[in-house]
Amino acid sequence: MVQHGSETQTADLAAALARIPSGLFVLTLPCPGEAGEPAGPGPLLVSFVQQVGFEPPRIVVALRKDRPIAAALRARDGFVLNVLGQEDGGLLKRFASSRLDPGTAFDGLNVERRAAGVVLCDAVAALECRVADSFDGGDHRLVVADVVAGVRLSDRAPYVHIRRDGLSY
Image (cartoon, rainbow, N blue to C red; front, side, top):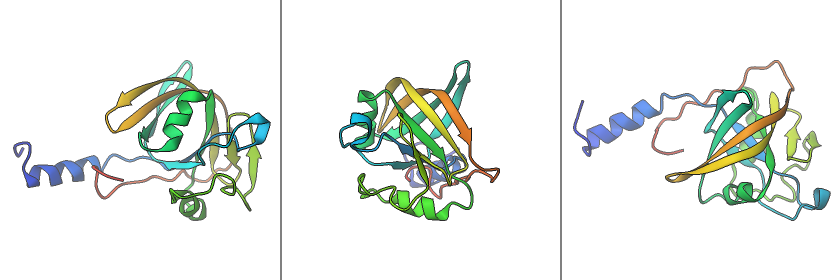
């Protein structure tokens, strides 16, 4: 192994980390103006998600600290995590934009609005989650959430994402 700090070491580390697979998900909060909810951040495409418990069913989501939704989750009770499928290129492109307008983000989509957030009916699954805790994770906020409800929307395979560089998105 090459010593820490060298360019070769950094490139090797980035390549090795990139081999850790992840999925692609759309995290949603309640829609602005729905059920008395104030306007807040729009939906966000996320990839750092992992199931970390069975009893209760629990996941952890890592959100970059500079994302408005990371701060909003600390102030809210829950969210919906939509699991994208391999063929969900249209949803992926739509939610990949960081400039998505929360007021129009779901226009033209088949959605179901729930108290915790918005279910994308064309995803492969949706999980309703309640925030249990959150932690500082360096440049990310680690949000631990209990999964309180879920629905399988399709038999299609979930999207598996492999990054080119494990040190950036």
